[in-house]
Length: 357
Image (cartoon, rainbow, N blue to C red):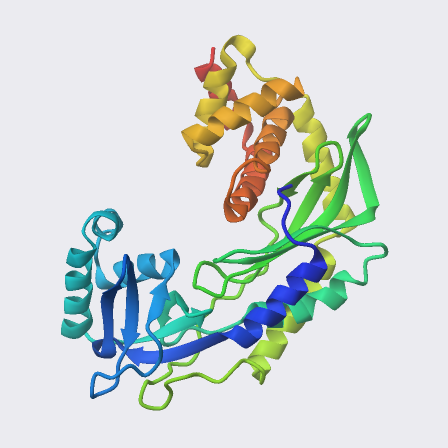
């Protein structure tokens, strides 16, 4: 599992961001993208075209959201951003003015990190962290194996050191939970069971057992609000959701569910890989499950190192390679892909092996 922050470091950063963030409701006719040295910034103007706040840097996620909202194809937006920023400024400002609409700007440390609907429901990291941490703390001797805050998400990954099983002699796994949240419109609050493999520190995020809440709420008007109040006062719906979230965290380390997943892993251990062309197996599986060509090379290396040429070995090679990728977000994606490979239908595994024959 990819190293991140300790739980103490995560708590410190969550509290820092809580005090450093701000949200604004603005009409796009009052926005202007401009050059500032070699970078582009977003200005928020009043009726006299005077800045209401300091010009804001623009995060990659916000750039993508601006392009999507304005109907500018992502590839073309990216090309203008890197090669012809003056053309991008002209395009964006023209559409801001010609098709005005109200949007929410989520700002942190002087940067627009998200460009969202004015009905976006905020459920921020602090609320999630404060809700789930006491529940995780109910696990005796709980181990926080990895935590992090990226530009896009917060992650908490913890295991119960007392709920363990052997997939094979010397190969012990523990039950755990992974909680994630996005404040920038890239996914709802999610809770998933986590299987932690002691042998190499891999983590497998289990699909099909999540709790989610879509970030959609009341419409905010720029005439009523410019700077939105903090989320310190929760609605009844918020409190109900957080209670449900706590119960889902408790159930994520359910012993019966853990036993079923261990049985699945033991079965995969006996599903042999066609060794006639191992790179072809990795490539075909990678194509099926969204693993890039570069990542496939890393998976192949980890698979050969493990000397476990089975379905179980392939899944573990994917999650082991997740420790090598630069992005924590992508590493977590690969942990989920590991489970998807592990639980693929028998017909799909047969097809992948046949292609390599």
